[in-house]
Image (cartoon, rainbow, N blue to C red; front, side):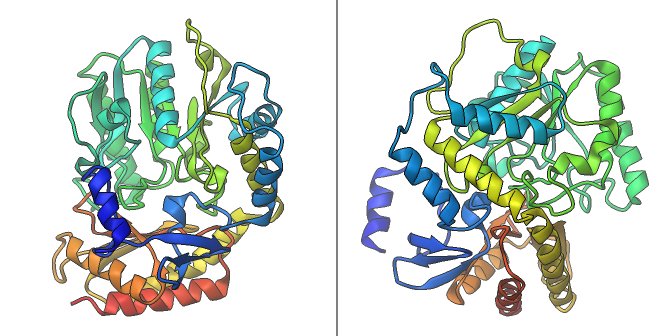
Length: 427
């Protein structure tokens, strides 16, 4: 055990998750690479849990943060804040939500917590519809609507949560149906559920479930849900904490794969926009955002230094068409990994879009989750200089791949080759 690991265990909670039996300290990074305390260089295919969205030590972001730090770091939302207004203007325009208002927080958890406050206040209901296998953060309210047992430490909640089918396409009672029939069955289930309860405040859903193992429904499911929700006045909250900013390649926001019935009423974001700085936020129609009848502030949400980082990062993302790069390079990577998986009985499925890819592992010849294999592949990949993530609602048996959006074709090939060897080493 390293000295730092021993110190970590002595002062931090036992439930604070760490990867690897011999945990890694990352000391610095550049581009798509990071270095460990052992001096080893790693290709980063996880980006600080999808947070380092563009690149490590991106000069444009580093310069913006340094210059802002030399002026003022923080003043709170009690004072006018030019960088916060400028970033809010850009996000409101990009969101697709009409007459949008933006509130900044420090994390995705806090963003979802705020969205739940808005929805329940606006609708005068404490019932929430959530998806099975979902994850929305670690606050008391967010844990209460999380449909993933591994990340839900308590059943106590200020909310009454009702779970809906549809977030996982290839497991569950509707898995064998065609896409059209799958959507129809999930819509019928939603209608039936609403016939047995008082009217909920909102449905909250990740367009692609992140912690759940990068699972998603067929395109159009949430558009079909939206038609039912609108009949009851129920709001739709799109949790874009992991899917936003072009990561899926095909769309800038995950909800746009389900946009036939219009944009969500509320959108939450975080992670990648700050490229490592603590930014989260909520976008909502003005009537929803302004429904609170008491004062509120955010001490650290929207602080000048994080807003400077967000502005520089968003500008770089748009000017360099990183959404297009995610589509092109991510498409190549998915096809390469599917070719590898076809030869390996331990791989049940390779799924995802753009640079948001999941590899689900099972015990060969069965449909049973294989968490030991996932842990072994994680270690084998690290040994060869590749960092990946893991997750999944069925016993943490999904490898999660989400590199920075500047990933090159050669780096994608390098990572795929390492993954091929790591997966092949599992028996």
